Amino acid sequence: MEETLSSKVVFNGQVVKLRVDDIRLPDGRQASWEVVERGDCVAVIPIDADGNVLLVKQFRRPVEKDLLEIPAGGIDPGEETEATVRREMREETGYLPKKVEKLGGFYASPGFCTEYMHLYLAYDLVPDRLYAEDTDSIELVRVPLSEVAGLIASGDICDAKSIAGLLLYLSSKKSASS
Image 1 (tube, rainbow, N blue to C red):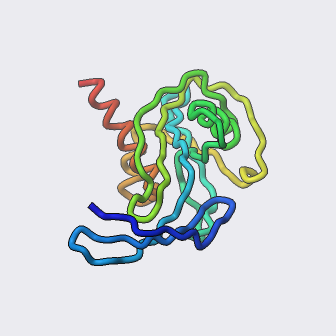
Image 2 (cartoon, rainbow, N blue to C red):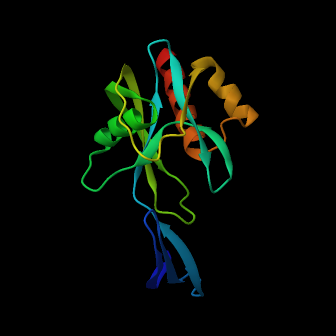
Image 3 (tube, rainbow, N blue to C red):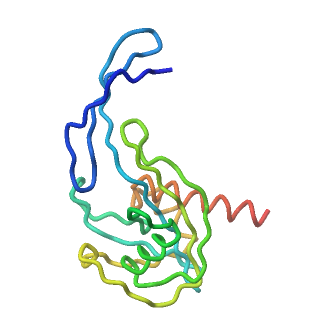
């Protein structure tokens, strides 16, 4: 097991904190490891009354292109995960889910980041927009569930949280119907 010898925060931003850990590897060698600290998030598989998945298309500055994704967002301090699901759904899709179920969770990129994503299913949706300043350019896209695997295979859905979340949901649906 690796041993942390020291940690130093080298950047503290609004969204992330970057620290450098000096560690001792199991073989005794020493190394430095950069760690991005980011708070936990929720990721949501919203299903409408017609069986469509509600995805959001938005420009992502780090990759400089529009991505088709499942709704997601950070958990505010003191906020319960289900409350975050409802808030993010209202902000990003304009719908409030009356029913929310936990599907699981996963680390977003554990090789360098602490972020954990709580995955939820949201359904029984009712229109209820909550405006947020960073959601003006989000486009809502309804996708039939039967087309999701093809969009993943083609690369039209290409971010890890959306791929992991949608495939987990599809797998759970297949298991339930077997």
